[in-house]
Amino acid sequence: MKPLDVLIVGGGMITHDLLLPSIYHLKRLGRVGAITVSALNSAPLRALHESREINVAFPGMSFEALPPLSDPPERIHPELFKEALSRLAPRQAVAVAVPDAFHYDVVRDCLLHDQHVLCVKPLVLRHAQAAEIETLARERGLYVGVEYHKRFDRRSLLARRHYRDGAFGAFVMGEAKLIEPYYYRHSNFQNWFTCDKTDPFVYVGCHYVDLVWFITGIKPVGISVSGVTGRFPNGQEGYLWANGRVRYENGALLMVTAGLGYPDAASGGNDQGLLMYCEGNNRNGMVQHIDNDRGVRYTFLDADNAEGTRFRTVNPDFFRLVPWEQPGLKPTGYGYESVAANIETMIRIEAATAGLPAADALAGRRELVAEVDRQGILATPANSAINELVVEAARLSILNDGAWADIAYEPTARVALRAKG
Ligand SMILES: NC(=O)c1ccc[n+]([C@@H]2O[C@H](COP(=O)([O-])OP(=O)(O)OC[C@H]3O[C@@H](n4cnc5c(N)ncnc54)[C@H](O)[C@@H]3O)[C@@H](O)[C@H]2O)c1
Image: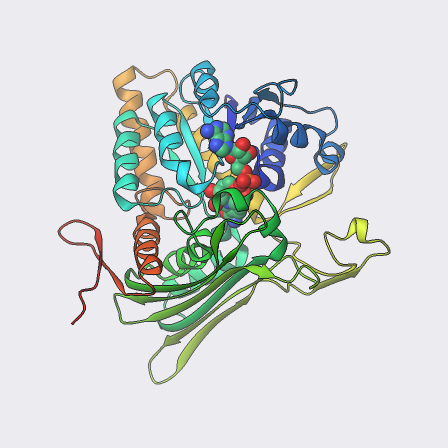
C-alpha cells in the first residue's frame, strides 16, 4: 500500500507530545512519505526541530518547516498552511492541531483541497459546522477522523465490549474528572483559552462525554455547565475550572469536573478518571477507571528526568517512547494507536480504490467511510456528532451561568437554552 504524505497544521504541545512522534514512527514503518509541519510562526517549529526528546527517539529524522526555521520568529503567517495544502497531491493526510476555534476553517480548507483529515478534538465548536464538514467530506469521498485517543485505551474498548454485551446493565449515574496541570496556565494557552472561546469542560471534559457515548451509545439530551474564572499570567481572563452535568435520553446523569489546576508539585501528569453505575435486573453493575494512577511509581534521582516532581505516578499507557529492536525509541500506547489507526484507515481507503475509474473510486471511498461511521470505533463527524452538540450546549450554558441547555435530535439536531418556567 502506498504511503501518504502528511502535513501537520499547528506546531504546539499536542504536535510535540503526540502527533509528530507518531507520524515519524509511521514514516519509519513505511506508512508515511514526506512530512511538513506548518505553524503561525517559526518559533514552535524550531522548538520541535530541536526537541531533545524527539531527536533521541527519531535519530536523523526531520520535517519540512513552513515557515522555514530561518524565518524571523516574530513574523506571523496565518495563511501559510494553505500554501502547504496546495503543494500536497490529492488525498494525502493532514493532521489539524491548531487551537479549537480555528478547527472549522482549517478542516474545511483541507477538504476543499481534497485531503483526508485527522483533527485533534474537539472537531468543531458548533454542530452545524460538523454537519457541513460531514457533507463536504462525503461529496468528495474523503475521510475525517477526530483524534479522541481515549477510545483506544484498552480499558475503554473492553468497557464498550462488555457494556454492549449487556454485562453491566444500563448506565444511570456517573462522574468523571480531568484536571490538567497548573503549569498549562503559563503556556501558549493564555493566548487563546479565554472565556469567550473555550473552557475546561469543552477542552478536556469532552473526552469523558465522548467515552460514555463510545461505551454506551446513549445520547445526551441536556447539559448544565458552571465555570470558575481567573486570570492567566498575561492578564487574560479564562474559565480555569468547570463543572457540568449531562442528562441522557434514558434519564441517566453524568457529572464532569474539569480544570487547569492539578498542582505542579503533585506526582502525576494530571488527575482523571471515570465512574459509571449501571442498573441491572435486581442487581447493579459498575465501571470504574482510575486513569491517573496506573500503578507505576518512580522516584528519579534528578528532577530533570521527572517531568515535574522527582516522585512520579506514571501513566505508561497513553504515550511513551520505549526501546525497540531498531535505533532510537518507538512510541507505544493508545495515543500512538489512535493516530496510527486514523492514518492506516486513510491508507486502506486509498489502496482499496486505487486505479478504479474516478466515479467508482469515489463511490468506493464513500462506502468505506460509511463503514467506519457505522463501526463507531474511530470518531468521525457522522458517528461522534453528539460531541459537537454537547460542546455547543456547554458553551451556551457556561456563558449563561450554568443555565440548562437542551439537545434535540428530531427533526434536526439542535441546541437551545431551556426556557425559564
Ligand atoms: N487530549 C487531546 O486530545 C488534546 C490535548 C492537547 C491539545 N489538544 C487540541 O490540540 C489543539 C492544539 O492544542 P495545543 O495544546 O497543541 O496548542 P498550542 O497553543 O500549544 O499550539 C497551537 C499551534 O497552532 C498553531 N497555529 C495557530 N494558528 C495557525 C495557523 N493559522 N496556521 C498554522 N498554525 C497555526 C500555532 O502556531 C501553534 O503552534 C487544540 O484544539 C487542543 O484542544 C488535544
